[in-house]
Amino acid sequence: MIRERNTGVAYLLWFMLGILGAHKLYLRRPLMALLYLFTAGLFLIGWIVDLFTMGEQVDACNERIFAHDDHTDFLEDRIDELEDLVEELQDQLHDK
Image (cartoon, rainbow, N blue to C red; front, top):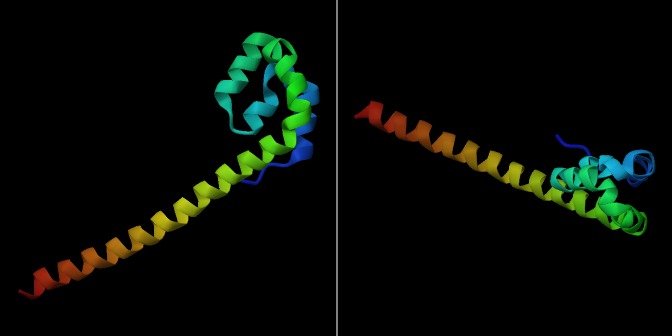
């Protein structure tokens, strides 16, 4: 299971390695992290903007994580149902 992201950790990564995109990797945004790496945090402008939007970015990341978890639970339940159905059909075929 994927852990929820923490705003404090995101700010720490932003401060220490933000112009290299470390906080973007933490927030599961690998393409943005690459962009930050090659442009020094979008020429520091993106890095400064992140100071004011980090909370929203962390919230958005956590929403994506939880949405993924909800889909995973749904799919696991559906797979269980289908496995039961396959077993029933196999039993019916063996009975004939």
